[in-house]
Amino acid sequence: MKRIKKLLCIALASVVLALSLCVDVSADVSFTPDFTVYSEAALLINLDTDDVLYSKNADKQLVPASLTKIMTAVLLLEQFQNDISALSTTKVSGGYECFDELYLQGASTADIQVYEEVSYKDLLYALILRSACEAANIIAVNLGGSLEGFAEMMNIKAAQLGMDSTHFTNAHGLFWENHYTTASDLAKLTKYAMSLPLFMEVASTETYQMAATNKHSEPRTISHTVLMMSKTNGGSYYYEYVRGIKTGTLDEAGRCLITTAQKDGYQYLLVTLGAPQYDENGNSVMYNFIDHKAIYEWAFSTFEYTTIISETEEIAEVPVEYGDGVDYVIVRPSEEFSRIWSKRVSPDSVHRDVELSENVIAPVKAGDVLGKLELQYGGETLAVIDLVATTDVARSRQKELTAVAQSFIGSNDFYRAVQYTAAFFLIYTVLVIILKIVFARANKKRAKLYVPPKRDNKRNNW
Image 1 (cartoon, rainbow, N blue to C red):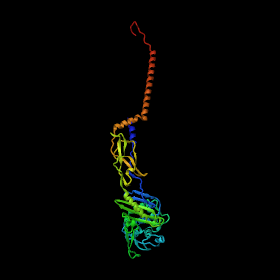
Image 2: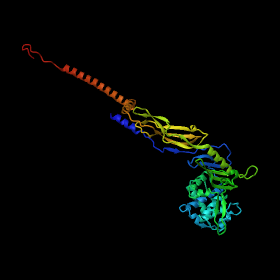
Image 3: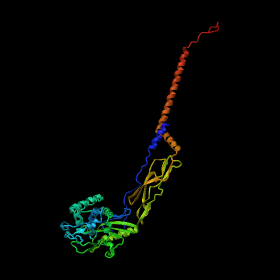
Image 4: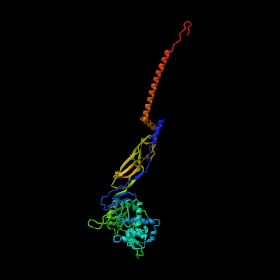
C-alpha cells in the first residue's frame, strides 16, 4: 500500500498547468491596395486599435525634410505642457545664427525677422502651418542654448520614444548629412505629439493670424501647407476627412506628408516619404496628396472592426485522466480577439495553430489554461491566445486507484516484485526439501543406533 501511495504522489506532482497572459498580440499584418502608391515609404495605422493596415518600406531610412519640425514642436510643447497658456505670453527672438544657414537654401519661412519678438505660440503655428525654418531655429536656440544643443535634445527624445532608426542634426529638416528617419519612427513621434496639449489644435488649423510685432506693425495671416484640408485651395487634392498634420519637401527627400483622417468612427494616421515631385512631363504634381487621398478612400471602404475569434467558440477536446463520469473537457479562447480587418478577407482564412496540454489529470476547474491558440495570416502571427476549460471536471477515486493499479502491474516495480516472489518461493522450496532430507537422514541414523531391551519370559516383564 505504501508503494501505491508513493507512485500516486509522483504522478500528481508531475502535472503542472502553465499560467500566462491571456492574449499576446505578436505582429502586425498589413494588406496591399489595388492601386499605385507613388511614395517610396508609407505606413497606415488605425489610431483606435494601433493596427498597421498598410506598410511599404516603413523601416527604410530616408530624409524626412520638414517633417523634422514635428520633433521641434514636441520639445517646445513639453516645456510648456504644465502651463500651456504661457506659450502666448512668452516672447523670444533669434539672432543671425538662426538665419545665416538658411540663406540661399530655398528654405520655407513665415517672414520672421532677425531679433523680431514673437510669442512661442506664434512660432509654433509658423513652424507647423508655414513650415517656417527660421521659427524652428529660434525655438532651438532659446530652448537648447544653441542649434547644436537643441539637436542633441532632439536625439535624446527620439531615443526615449523608441525611434531607433532616427538621427537629427537640425531643427528644420533641410538636407544635412546624418539626418534621417523612417516612416515607422515618424509614426511613433506623431502619435506622441498628438497626446500633447495644443498639438492637434495647431496641426489641424487651416489659417492662423500671427500678432503684430516690433518688426511687423500689422497682424499677418498664414495658411496650412496641407492643402487637403482646404476646400478653397486644395482643388482635386481636397479630402474632407483629413485633419492636419505636416508636409515636407526637398529635392533629396521628395514630397513627404503626415496626416490623420476620421470617418464613420474610424481614425487613421498615415505617414509617407519620398513621393515624386514631378510627372514624366516635368509638371509639378503633389503625389503625396494623391497617395494620402487614395489610401484613405481605400481604408474607409475596405476595413471594418471584425471579430476574428469569439471567446464562446469551442476549439477542441482535451483528454482528462481520472475524470468523474467524463474523459475530456472542452476548451475555448480565454477572450475574444478582434481587430480592424479587410472586408475582402474572410476571418475563416486565418490559420489556427492549436497546442493542447498533455497528461491532464482531474480535478480541472473552469478557466484553467489547457492550451494555446496561435492565429496566423499571410505567414505572420496575429495573436497567441490561451485556451481554457469550459467546465469543471471532478476526480474519480475509483478510476484513480484502478489506473494506479494498472500502471503498477505493467511497471518495472511489478516485474521486480514478481521476480522477488518467485525467488522467495524457490528458496523456500529448496530449504524445505533440504530440511526434509536432513530430517530423514537423522531419523534413519537414530533408528540404526537404537537397541530395544531384552524381554524376561519368566517374569513376563521387561
